[in-house]
Length: 283
Image 1 (cartoon, rainbow, N blue to C red):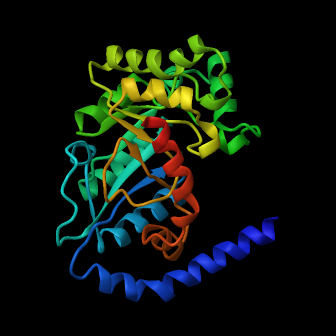
Image 2 (spheres, helix red, strand yellow; image 1 turned 90 degrees about the vertical axis):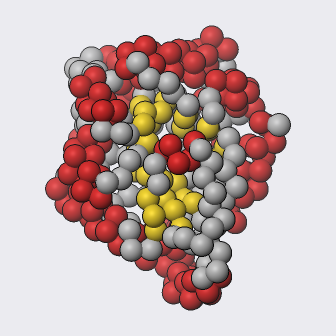
């Protein structure tokens, strides 16, 4: 199975060189691209260096927008650079470091999705162990046992113009939560906690894992009543901004070629059908 995945990635990389010229021709007259990227825990010096290299490369072809721009449903059907919104899932402490060392340099405002019970959790606590195992269902490696942000880290992000979104109470896969009470805790109580602790309004929610099978109609209905935007992990172009948001999962180790192949939509067709199904749940 691994060799099939490697082969698909090679095809994706090659597709970028084949299609980029045609894509640039199409967007010469009208640009209508807005991509939302998902990063997670970017903590080592090597990863931060690679992340900065990615941002530098993308900034030559894309305009980085803020969560406020997305909330205003900006007019993207204009002759200007294609647009990118950066998002970070889970709430690891490395997020603040990236904001200080990289995002501030490029004047980028990002959206940080926080697991509310993860904030300030001590590594020795049962709460930390439960959530870290929810984030890494196959079991976290030693390198993945990272500290979460504490209250001061999140206050720093807010004071520097970044937005906080909700990523559930404990990072459970919502499609597997059968109890309505527990589902409400994961979706609503988590939001209430973040709003109360930080004096902010939460408009964005990203459901854990982001796949079609990790969410269901029952959860979607609750989300629809409590949030303005629901962020998935399905790849696609948000040229028509709706409540349900496409997002591209990436990481600092990903080559620039592969990253740009995703951004010009060479894998979008694989996700479009399931995205439409989720949108039907909303309607």
